[in-house]
Image 1: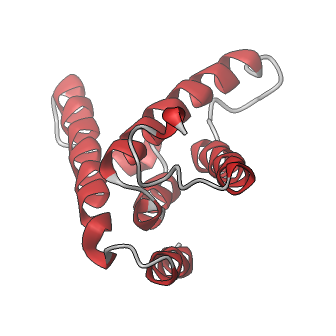
Image 2 (image 1 turned 135 degrees about the horizontal axis):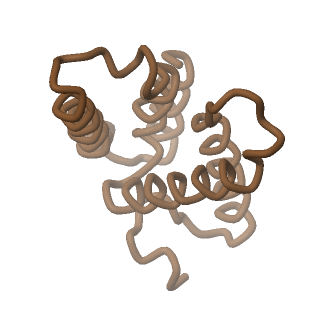
Image 3 (image 1 turned 180 degrees about the vertical axis):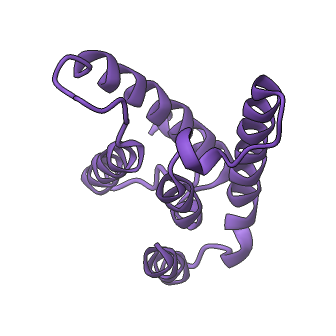
Length: 135
């Protein structure tokens, strides 16, 4: 994931975007992760490691690694859309999957590829603008 993070930073550098703009989406990831950890700890009535049974460390690393690719508003929209897709995926395929795990990073990676293809197809930058639906 560290390599992906540096590739994403390189893409930002090539497109002349502000390099430190990824800090706002990264802070969003930190706040959401802290919120999930707090919620699970309060629910279990003890401080626990959320990576042991509730969310994968790879998912969190993926969230952090893609932060340079988005502005804050676009990242929040991507995050929410990805969570909805993950829920739908788990509901549709729950009969076929033996383990109760959701490949969250994989689903979000597919969504990211789809959005990048749409961005290139439209010839518009949809990742740094909140109003990307009005292209």
